[in-house]
Length: 284
Image 1 (cartoon, rainbow, N blue to C red):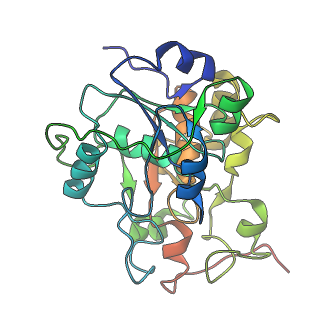
Image 2: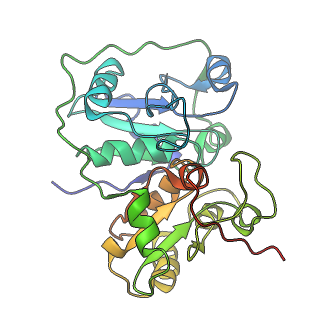
């Protein structure tokens, strides 16, 4: 079976949205995300909560960072509750150009072998702009008949120790997708310490998008990442962000470009910066 593109346009979604196997999810993530969903969302969309359904947040952020992955068993149950089965065609969007948690949900589904999952290009803003019907209230999914079958994460994941061992090696590339001011160590709005992992290269996720907030064309993305990775093998490339969420936006962009998906460092800066690891800055 041919794989589907990881990105779907609003025009393409309009054509398939009434099919029974299509399930749409709002994965926006901020303080008022659930209330915003109830106020306005794509018609038929369900809400998925990254903090309770797509992560297993620990009392100590030093253990796995701000958004550690849930266990396979818990994620399997979550997918059943969300009504997702192996035949579902899942469409995910958010209010931050896919960078909020839409890309994370996409990555998690791909990582358990679910191929039919796509992120809506431009998010809810594009949907509104191009006239996709909206609704208010809360839609409750009909649970699937059984838990989703999965045994392990199938996409590559890097742990903190591996990142520490390879981040300054010439044949490896650690990509930090956060904004430049955070990478440089000028200020840190979320985590306790500003700076970056020594040896990491800053390629902000925002560079995956054009001025309208849509993903660049696959050939453009492919050329950009080919230049950045300089022929390094995929298993020598590690992508991270602050909490393992926005990094998935870059993994999504690379997949959209037709490239293999490199390793995700889930703990990211939120874990690294709380474990006494070496910190680099570009601030004099």
